[in-house]
Length: 415
Image 1 (cartoon, rainbow, N blue to C red):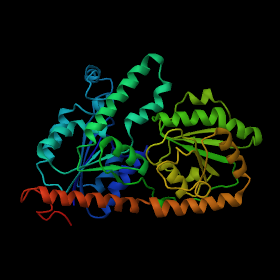
Image 2 (cartoon, rainbow, N blue to C red):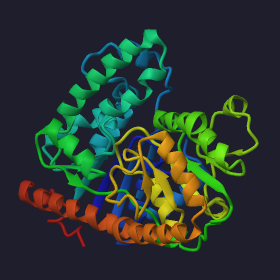
Image 3 (tube, rainbow, N blue to C red):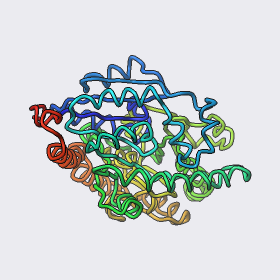
């Protein structure tokens, strides 16, 4: 099939769960022989490494620069009631709109738009042409905006509340328009369905199980691992909770336990705030396998639901026993006590860590169960098949709606 795929960021390097998802789905579809044109608006220029990673997967890679965050246009447009701030930052882009309109002159079997906050430049063209398309929503931004609300200065909180209200209106407007809507978990699908009043597909997040199969965790190492993208407020909350409440209780019973913290945009100031030699500040690692092989378990004390956590799936695929919260594991049909250990109580989490570190036999059981769960439910091959089902419905809609010669299927472009 010929696929037109839009993104508001470059999916390489894979510094976040969303980028990891995009890269692996692009790779899976390319391996199936589909011809993909990727249209990207990026705040980061296209570098040689990204070009080398992406171009072999694509028929065309088109990257347009996003205007700076502090552009006067963003400031002047911020009071517009129709658009939330994130849609303004990623929208109101004439060059992107023009490029998209030009691409729509070509026949496509699938048009795939990622994220409601990147939808604004495409809305009018899609409405005018009446073409079938799908939109993927990874998180409800009106909900995830709550994660940073209490961290904001008091004077900014009313503005944040106002923007979340705008985003809810935007979601109601955008999510009713596509031919197909995709969520990354049943939990998110239910929330989106309530907003849009329509059925929502689930295409789960995944993991490259073969890539992590060789990892053998150091179950006697007494080292825990946390991984996160620290541009995300939910990971800030998780680290604060872990270092202020959970780990002090663990250290009280076992002072030898260490915590390795890895991820993109790790704040330098944290090393001064939590100056403890048992905390290892690792930062971003493009390949986690060596670090995973030196750890005993994975800690993810997340306080917000939404999405399906790629980092947890990567830990399971690597055989690391997972300690998390019920919200942290949301989006994954995993069993507490079998595939992971979980609680929303900090005292209980500390107790689980302490007890599990003294039960290597149970750690091995969880390691095997987690690996099996990741492979059968969330390998990227499984995920790509879920996406292919949505794509097939789109091609059928395109065939039904397009005049002779306008649809790629009618011209023999689908394989």
